[in-house]
Length: 510
Image (cartoon, rainbow, N blue to C red):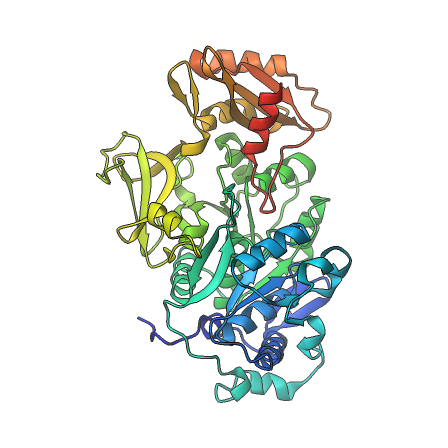
């Protein structure tokens, strides 16, 4: 058990050797010595602001050395990091910053043209110029950076239950919802993920997800803690750049949400290019249909594919399926990660027998403290020391979990609760379909009619009539869509997840 007053910034930076590569970004390659120097310089800047302990400091930056150093500096100084997605509007950022009383910012000056209004009126702002030249060769600094007695590198003491990060969720509640992630939460989740992925200092992950998203942050946490490296790919407009980056930087890992892998399958050479350095692939952030999981695994058969499940309210990960069980437990999200217990329960909290559907309930040291300034929301979601996930699932006899659907995504048609997942699996199994989402549209007779939106692979020519014929041949009658529409792309939020509320509105408009 770690001491209760150990700052998680020291935990994350405690393993990397000074001369080892830590971050590769658009400005170059940066060692752990350079990262420690940048972190110390930014922490010293924050100290001049004379903020009370636990002050909220906004972080608005593209993925970069600056993002990482600023994040660690905020934690190091005993304050609370508040990451903002760069895709938000300045108005959204100011609204969310006001909600958590965030008046100071670490700001990427490269965003000045689009986001200057977001930080107007801030009491204090620091940008990458405050890193004091982290690329300069300075062996003296490299030595000082590993000297635990250096005052500039001694983090402020905090309790493991103190807030470290306020992570905004991508939900659709009327007011902002920020999850209170503690120093202890980060340490527990990082240790568990690093353990089952067997991460070492030789690993280097290709990151396409924003660090402002809990999944992206977990990639940062786990690879820093292992003393490994992070290669940042900050544009996904041309998916082939991911393949090129893996080859160029000799990455051992890649991680993505469903839309990440769907785009790689649709518009890159991922299925045809041998990537020998890849050791592991991580998939989380939503459910990738089983036919596409099979394709991803077959694309790089020498790399281990980890199908995982998690939530922001649980810091990041809750479960994983060991790669060797991908075929034996098809469709499963696995079982709880080390230190996490998962159960499928009824509304009263009674554990359900195998095969019965209930809600996934989680316990573990990674379960966060709840929502910022939202006691009602916290009380509804965080119950008896655990987390109500809102995901309905069943277990098999061995305790492996199979998600049926999100509670909010079920389609109630002709008195039957239709799983959108089952419909989507059928649709994406049609050759030429690269992505699909099923939603309900209000219907006077059925209650809800099933509407499917799909994206096709360029040049495939697959039609809605062909998809409907396949659904009629493979699905139960009540699961067959009433309408199938092709769209150029599915709407995604800043974290790459499908926004079904937009599709529901589109379906309702006819």
